[in-house]
Image (cartoon, rainbow, N blue to C red):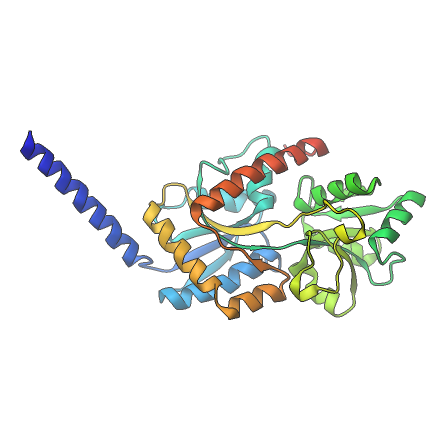
Length: 321
């Protein structure tokens, strides 16, 4: 009996040692960060910043691959079914990971059970924008105009963050902006520029250039506090809606069965590069604020947001399928 116990303990010790060595050897080949949205948006911009830094740190290429479709579900399914070795990661955000489970009646994966939270990267507010020559410049202007005549806003589709933020604004301001869903954010922005719709709620990085060159007018950001690099843009809370605060997180996930020590290794390395002034400045230029957590803290954030946004989806009546 004693000999059997000794053998069992030796096997456990060897397994733990091998597992630790595996973490030290990671990555052993190029790492892919899959972005389930098109290039040019917030997820893509942040993923490319962090990919370069991780590539420098790991001495291995870290490649960003865009795999859009079905509100992010196409890319998510690819990662959920990828080898559980840490070499394929998902760049996700609250829209795909905390909302889609309530929005889509049928998913080929479970947003919680089929993914391992690795590391948060940033929080990044959305912004209400209009054409530069629009007659409304402030939240008060929008509310007053909406009470006199119908106004509308475009979104990336039913149940998208863009859509739900608009519904939350309607509730907070006591107005009824009509929702116009599109197949993605790009066509919504095209119609905004063309004058077919009045407003769009969208991520700051996707319109930062248009804001800076004066093509679009930023009416307000959705977070409780102003974005550091866009401090001239007021918040919706500044207009008197003090409890309004929508500040979506962005972060990295891995397939669910990636070993915990690999997850911990990636988290530590991500948090390390996120502390550099270079990354902080590049994120700030996108309107993002760095946000560091442990995998366990990230899992708790995800769980709370699945509950929070599920209620918003149900209240909006949005559904896909």
